[in-house]
Amino acid sequence: MARRCDICGKGTVSGSNVPRKGQAKKKGGVGQHIGVTTKRVFRPNLVTVKAMVNGTPRTIKVCARCLRAGRVEKVVNIKQEA
Image (tube, rainbow, N blue to C red; front, side, top):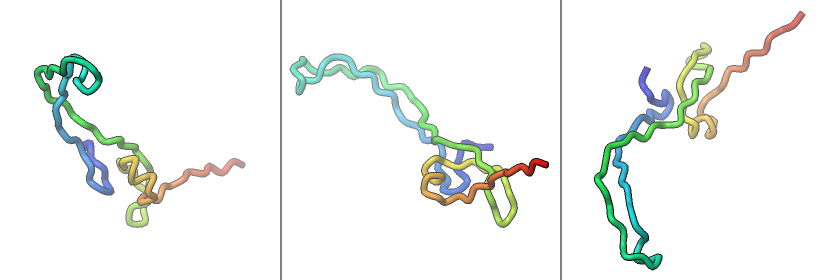
């Protein structure tokens, strides 16, 4: 399965890693030097959750934001002990 939220569709996003050396002029330095940028990946905070999907319990991947917002109805397993 892909690294993607099943509710909102949030997935991985690519970006750049920008290394900076030196102290900024604002802070009393001689200025920053920016090095060679390299590619990096921003991954979503996904949690595997057992939830109700169309009336049936299913295991889905949900981002933390959707989980906190209450967009997912979690299924709680309560074991009956005799």
